[in-house]
Length: 447
Image (cartoon, rainbow, N blue to C red; front, top):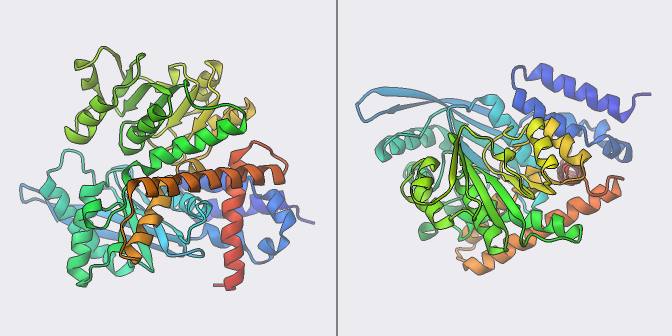
């Protein structure tokens, strides 16, 4: 008789064979599948109906050419992607990433994670992801506008508020969403507000959407600490990155009484033992779009070119930059230096070895699909407001976000206990998300 573990290993090897060269996707699938043995033992109908195999195969994968013209009049050609992974719980929902590292494997890893992250929110949204290998850095507003218009021209037939609702991700902020929405409106002759989220509040966007991922990550960490009889006030924290997620994670940490002593960008690390000056950080990154190295020109702090932020001792670490930024060696350094909690603001920022290190050391580890679900949750709240032609206050929207994150924590916590792994949020998150999708797929039949 084949055991659940053997079934899962067979499925994983099949995924690797069918998707060669997509290391990030393989990693994301492995992380989820490794948690599902007890679920298959409890629910043999999932194996009989090949639910795992069906979830691992996207419903639709789109790859398209994106031609555009730069300011010199030279024609450039980028590659666009949209992987519509699973719509069992609702319309496809997931961001667009514009970055040179983007290829099909990255988009599939992000889309696969998105399925379960979206399921964890308890809101009716499926999982997808998209993007392009276009690099917006150093490009003028007009170049970005022309690229976005070309990208949307190719993608628009596959979108709709009841079909697929993209949002932003790395390289795609309110500016890019505006250009994308403008072109969609132009092509369709419809003011379909709910087709994109992350919009400006001035024309259909939700208040708190910009802050949501960072805020939500901190709320999740706060709940993990509360479950251990502890709190976030007074804790020394490090936050990797200095983009949208990192900035608002820092803001919420400071509001809750924590002390953030370091942040980073792709060039280096700022260590400010007195506490990061949030207003200065926002001025440099959000207004002037400058490098973090200029922080020390305005404040007495240390800048470490090419530094590793995880070498700085802290009690709470929030990786908020990009995938696989926190490896096993850095995880061991954090544990050795007294880190007690890790909340992933980015998608899969910790390598498998790092995850094992945190869980083995008893660190409260919040995986990204749970800890950073606040962004997509608030996107779904934006969709609700668009559907009802309504606009909510900042305070009301934040209270909804806070409640969603508390519920995600509770669901993960209780499910980990149910399956004999108390305190293991990785197992809890993967099982909660998977079961919700699996039950819907069973209800719909073999489609």
